[in-house]
Length: 143
Image (cartoon, rainbow, N blue to C red; front, side):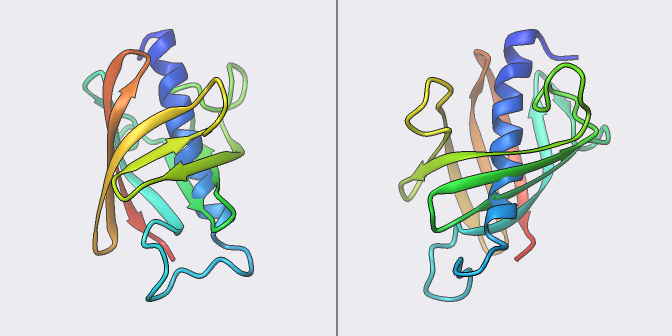
């Protein structure tokens, strides 16, 4: 089980990843050709921190990124504390900003967390630091 600081960081990351897909499902959030390739709904296929892949261990994370610069995370079987101490499933959202290679979850807040990202076809990868430790995530586009 990750340490408390890593759990908080992983929670922020997971929440961002889950929230992004939900917000992209709304009307007016184009995800087709000619739109920002980051926008849409993404399912986490890997979430590694402290040598453990919590997705492989049974956690799920779906993220939606919208044209409104918001993310939505949907989490089940939370293993990193995204949903808080007592909940194992949740939906959370907040502001997000990005450049061509950097994504900031909870942008403009005291919880802002920065990740480097790459998109290749329907696969997106993130790398960064949560709670002072390195983390990496992989996502597959849902829509």
